[in-house]
Length: 477
Ligand code: FAD
Ligand code: NAD
Image (cartoon, rainbow, N blue to C red; front, side, top):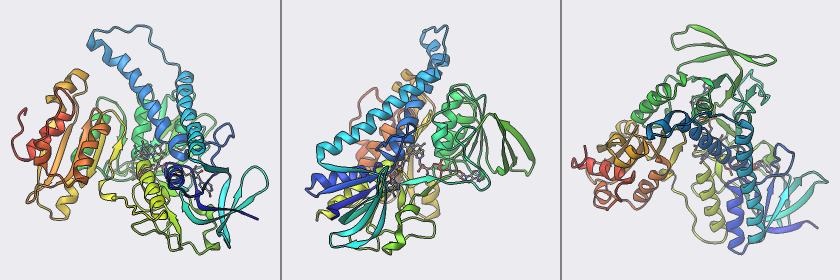
């Protein structure tokens, strides 16, 4: 007889493992099924985020920023560094240790919360007395379990580029880009999205000559235009990354130790460029092909996303889907919050995620973060707004840090003063955006933030001053 659960979660990324823990906390018998294997061929929980996404990329970002500081910034503080050297092996080992700590940490959290963990790929194989039947194909004989409720959290995969084969040695996706054993002399990147600029800046800081080819005529189209413009200036100026927008890649030819990319620039001029490594980062697609969706009539849309309503419910009773496998931004915190909401819904509580207040962060230097609507979106929608802006160059704390590039911009409704969007490019933008998210969730006005005391000297004063600026009463500019 198949083992029966209240809840089966398929996928143990930030959507799935969080859903499983929350379901178990609420007293539901829960199993989490995950098929991920790491580079050593071992099962590793945590999905894309922990294994080959958020966590390893941020570990390398920090290492590369430290190298950059030691090389170029310490001298300003009167700290002389001689004999500086780079041990990429050690840097990668540090990254892997951080990843291992967190992935094994999930196993411990599962034990603590009494979540059963099964390794293998899960797929629907019909229904039985105990609910949905799911076959789990791991290293041994496939097993079948049954569950009254199913949470699909199978995440996403890199979007393949037609005619380009990723070998993760010379032509890489995010997995290869996080694992280079040495700094490539010439690094090409296709796609100036989040992965392209994050990975491009890591390897640039470590010494690579980086060229990014972007198909769209615009740079970071989802960001506020003014922020995107400042980011472009910073990345192509002080950082020294070459970014070509409006570039059409015609062919990618992989050789023994290099790769040749043929592309037309925005004027249509043909270029043929050789790189030592190429990263292809042109977006991600939902990972739903292995679910055997048709066996139970689960509805996927034309692009392979599981179709869900505002509460992550699919077309099947008691089947939910969360995270990168469904509509909305592909962000770890969005996946996790949907996981919590779904577990609480299954347990009879009210679960909901407000997609309008999901913070976005791009972990470059300077960092970029935003929540809510951009100026161009407000203009297109005909919404009247007031804007307040404060540059970090006028912040005492930013000066002390030596990180003065960028600004905070707050947008508030012209009639009600309610905050509609906050856009930051600058130091610790990822931390500063938290205040803006809280403010928007509580329906705050710019005046609310303007009247709150912010510690001095702190970067949060820039958010305060931007709020004051909405009412044309900023003090320090
Ligand atoms: P995933 O993390 O993709 O997890 C899905 C899991 O399900 C995987 O383990 C997969 O193997 C497993 N699986 C799939 N199909 C099956 C099946 N049939 N049976 C069993 N298991 C299955 N987001 C941020 O918010 N901040 C960041 O800084 C950030 N950095 C990133 C950097 C990179 C390089 C990349 C690639 C992504 C980054 N992201 C970041 C995005 C983030 O990683 C994803 O949004 C997040 O991991 C999605 O979580 P998920 O649980 O939906 O799916
Ligand atoms: P992306 O959607 O951010 O960017 C892809 C870029 O590639 C776009 O600018 C697109 O116009 C461009 N592009 C598409 N086809 C192209 C082509 N043929 N030639 C040249 N350019 C082309 O995707 P990504 O950078 O691959 O990242 C995937 C997702 O992972 C992101 O959308 C994000 O949700 C998530 N992610 C988040 C973070 C973070 O939160 N800090 C970090 C990394 C990844």
